[in-house]
Picture 1 (cartoon, rainbow, N blue to C red):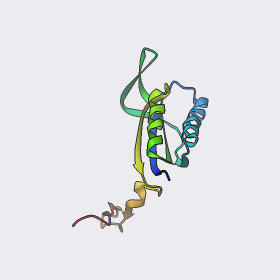
Picture 2: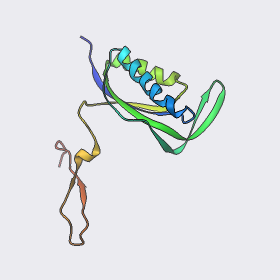
Picture 3: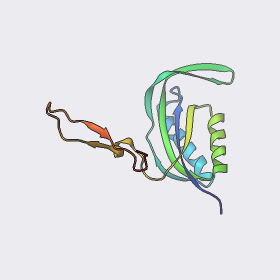
Length: 138
């Protein structure tokens, strides 16, 4: 039986792609993953973001620099051998500006799940603290 891992891919789509074509581009990525035998666990809606720094991409000998891009992400299960094919797909894509694939867990790992609120201080302001991981050494 083949080993299956959980991955999350975050990627930027070039902003020059027409806005009505963005959902189709996201569907291409998801279809590619499912065609490899993967299962989509969750995803984020594409959102136009200002980049922290300009990113350049060369397509057909034409170099373009972008200050904005559509950011989206998808969490999926797939074999480690097949995730290499997903990386190759992103590398070959003319519409993917940048991507990152990480190994993760199936459960929700949002930072908000780890933040708790303390009662108001004397000044009346709420303080938020991060809980220490259960397995940390003290």
